[in-house]
Amino acid sequence: MDTATNPSMLRSILEQRCPRCRLAGIFRASIFRGFPKMHQRCPVCDLKFEREPGYFLGAMYISYLLGVALIAIMAVLLWAITGWGLIKVTVCAIVLFLPLAPTLTLFARVLWIYLDQSVDPERLR
Ligand SMILES: [Zn+2]
Image (cartoon, rainbow, N blue to C red; front, side, top):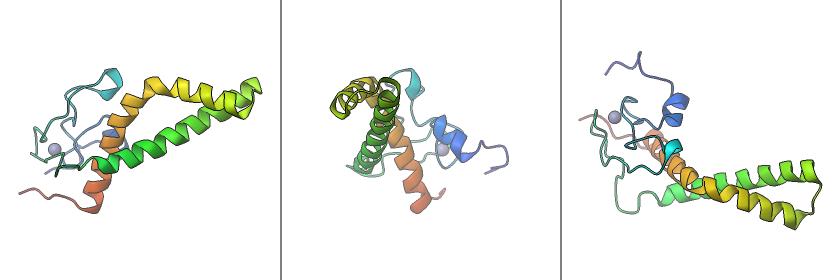
C-alpha cells in the first residue's frame, strides 16, 4: 500500500482514521460532531477495530487519564482566574468537564486502537 500520500499519524488520530491504511474513518462520522457508531472493520483495508470482547477496556484507562488531566488543567485555570478554593474549583472543573466526557471516551478508543496497533499490529492479509 502506498503510504506516501497518507496523512501523518497525528492528523490521522485527530481525524479518527484507521491506523493501518489511514484512509477510512474508524467512526461513521466525526466524534467532534456527535456520538457516531464505530465501523466494525475498516471499509478500505478490513482491519477489525474491536479485536476481541472487552477490547476497549484499555481505552477506559486512557479516558480516565485524559479526563483527570483535563479536569486538573481546568481547575488550575479556574483557580488562576478566580482565586477560589480547591474544592470549589475542582467541583466547577468537573461540571465543566461533563459535556466533554462522551467525546473524550470515543477519542480514547481511537488512541487505544493506535496504541494497540503500534504494539501488536495486525498485518494486511
Ligand atoms: Zn484501514
